[in-house]
Length: 463
Image (cartoon, rainbow, N blue to C red):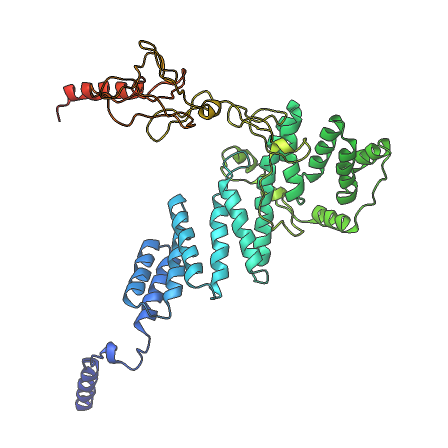
């Protein structure tokens, strides 16, 4: 029995202390994964766990090491997603650029629709309140409209439509506040320019019935009852369940205008809006609205049904709201234009006289039309007198013998002395008018002042 026990214990000890053989995992049959796939999976796991920088470094290594990998598109999209999850102004800008690059390089992949939606969502996350800067809201509206126009049947389209309704509610609320301020102040034109844009572009706005009422009141007080009746009629027709609908009917009756019938689609839409579930803030969250940077109440009040506006925004001038036509004027009112710049000449009349003649190629002012047509004098002037065609104070042109030069008889062109005088000075023009001056008589004050400045600078700075 003792021998059997000893033999059993020795065999067990050999089994326990038996060394295992090392297996080379690189050559193992179980290791069938591609290295680019392994690298992508590790980077995606890092991004999922919040290690954004480590994940981006792995994805960038994949792009640089395996440019022909099948995970190249996913790696680029993953880098953009990492910036989006990290949040922040700078990271959002990097995310938007990454998504747009993905759309450019891979426009036919199914992920292109997701990238377009993420561009809009990045702007959506950075929206401010309606009374603040609305550049991000405008950009988000444009990107959501692009997504819905390019991918209308995408599974993410319903979410994009609701986001677009929220964005348009924020933009319309900002315009409404400005228009209401001018409406209370009494500036009709400024109020109408804002309110008309809301009425045309955002029919799903939660205060559209009030917008229509204010526009009707503005045009009624401006003695445009035919236009005011249209806005009152819109309240009765398109917003029949509004509290302003009875007052609008009374206005139409007072104007002796037919009262339109409510639109059944509008009734169904307003009924669905009234029954739509909406979030409500508790007593704790309501005071936080003062320190909240983004819009909140507008998201609750935005429409939950109906198709949002997909047309791009057009510029509407506030000066054309209450004026007829669309004429552009050049300075001043009444269409008079700027007479200092533009001069009107009626056909068949004489050309307007100019105050200063245009210089010719030789640097002297050209004669006006009546003086250019006059014939040159045929008799030489008396000794000691100035020539008939020369300017006062200018000596007459002389030849080499000292005699005065005379223009040829019967010629209609002004006589010119091209040869220099005996004393070396240039001969004056024989047909200069009395009011004209040579280029030597005038000195440019700007050139003189600039030369003085240069001399002064040279004294201070020798080089």
